[in-house]
Length: 68
Image 1 (cartoon, rainbow, N blue to C red):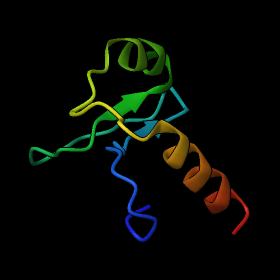
Image 2: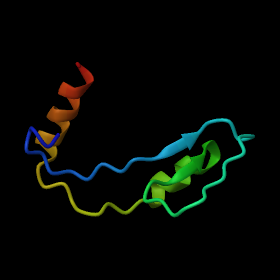
Image 3: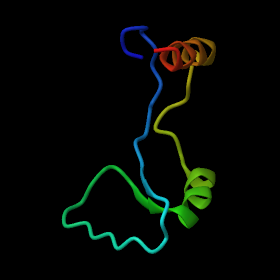
């Protein structure tokens, strides 16, 4: 996306789809670690760090990445 000069915040997330998974985090991380049941609440409450000014360019960039 940077090569396309697209300025959109992309937030990484680690999602464990097995709700029985035992996950321990030993240090603070900027990447949220979620269980399957937490994903909808996380997405609904997420606040972007910045607004997307060039949404059309971002969509095009994502479409091109899908083709790789």
